[in-house]
Length: 222
Ligand code: PMT
Image (cartoon, rainbow, N blue to C red; front, side):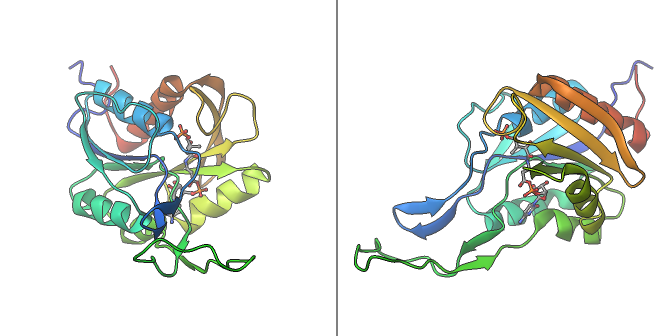
């Protein structure tokens, strides 16, 4: 009675942008601040879940009172998620994970030489896709950051990565996506778009997304 929607559930949330090293003083990353993932972790805890936050590079302050593991690269994040995967009930991949990393990490600072320097990149593991393939009881939520063709790419990612829900972010929309305190997403499941969330705080977006997930996981709403 009066059980919170995510009581008794273990939730993993990833946040921030991974760091892919080039040499000891340089790396590749992206514009993720961590705000979206941090908001999800905070709201999941408010909804009664036991939350494990796994964060890469972030400019925002992580929420206090939530277990946090810091990682750098996509590979590090993958290993951190795997450790928690079997015992988790819900995984939310809000992190902006690099698709590629430098083929080699130079052990010393790369020196300036020719007018053109070519950096060779190799594909990273797709964490969400790997989880999607080994999913048992877990409920899986992916994000998609897009700059066009939102619906097509969202449905493609949802299916390819075997997600239960996917929050599609058109990051060209004012007040949505990277860095800002607000977001706007379209939520998809296998049948298509299930909810359109206009620009509002990342916490409100998190609450709507997690409420939808909790309903579908068979959680009790109060
Ligand atoms: O951190 P903020 O500044 O608040 O910004 C929020 C956000 C824009 C980063 C967030 O809302 C968001 O959209 N996160 C996903 C960004 C992303 O990497 O999207 P993607 O379309 O490249 O990846 C699709 C999904 O696969 C994501 O859930 C991603 O975490 C996952 N992925 C991607 C690549 C990879 N190698 N492994 C993955 O697991």
